[in-house]
Image 1 (cartoon, rainbow, N blue to C red):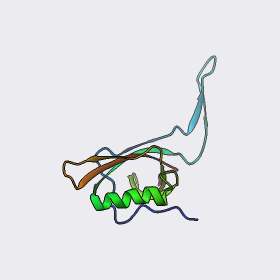
Image 2: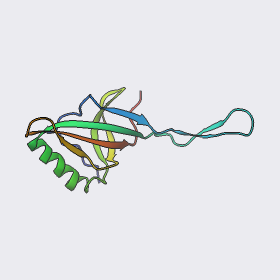
Image 3: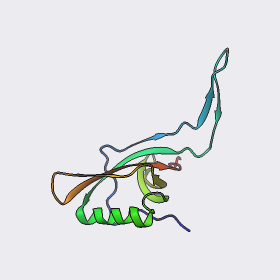
Image 4: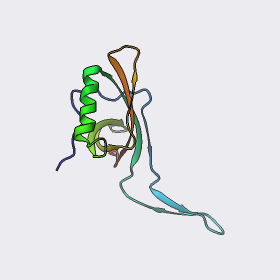
Length: 124
């Protein structure tokens, strides 16, 4: 069965506050003497991503329904378009902790932020 796709009716993530950091793809072993040794742990390098969206009340309802129903309360993998060195590209991701919602200064606008882990960003 294919992964759910982030709803097309929701906007792309915000640039401010966006960032990602790769998990170290290698293991490092310090030696008693001389240089440390390193070896590759895996080929597809996961990344931890911080992402946020500014949503209207209706969009927030869509997002909450997507997380609860399609992502089984946030545990399932899904496909979402995220910016990286190749542009805005689809990646496979899942939530690593519950999303947070805060007011954006108006009663009908909300900032939603969460942390994701991705399997791999595309690289040329």
